[in-house]
Every structure is written in structure tokens, then in C-alpha cells.
Image (cartoon, rainbow, N blue to C red):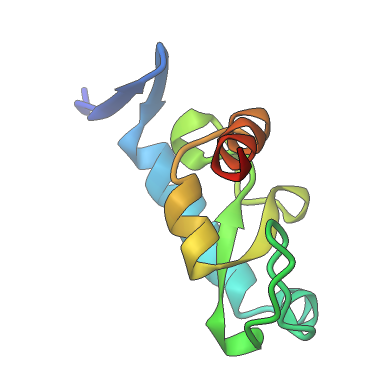
Length: 103
């Protein structure tokens, strides 16, 4: 029987094998025409900054470690700053974070 390493975060158990599979899917999608068209305008999904297509990163709206998947409706182009700051936050948690920065 194969032993599966798991990541525990927010009472969610995600097998490392599942996360690796989703990362592999994301790499495939990153090479797709769909992703290149999504990034063509060079605008960050979160802050709206124009950073250019080559400076955008792929972000999982619902992070993999929170149960998100590498599917088109869960992937958005984000500037490196937003992607690094968002980390593992869910959309509503990210909105709260942004509100706190503006106050």
C-alpha cells in the first residue's frame, strides 16, 4: 500500500500527489493558446495594473492547497506582487486583505 504525504491547512487534507497533478495541469495550460490570449493585454486580474504579458503569473483563484483545481475558470493572470501577497487566500479573504491595505 502506497503511503501518501498530505498537507494540512484549514482542516482540509490535500494529498501531495493531488497537488502535483494539478501543478502539472497548470504547466500544460500555461503553454496553451487560451492562456496566452488571457495574458495578451498584460493586465493583472486583481489590481488592474498594466505590467505586460511577460510579467504576469498564473494564479489559482481558489489555491490548490485549499482544494482548488487547475481548470480554466480557476486560473487568472496576476502580477507578481498580487500573486505573492495573495498566497493561499480565498477570494473573500483576499478582498478583506485589500480593504485593510486601503484603510
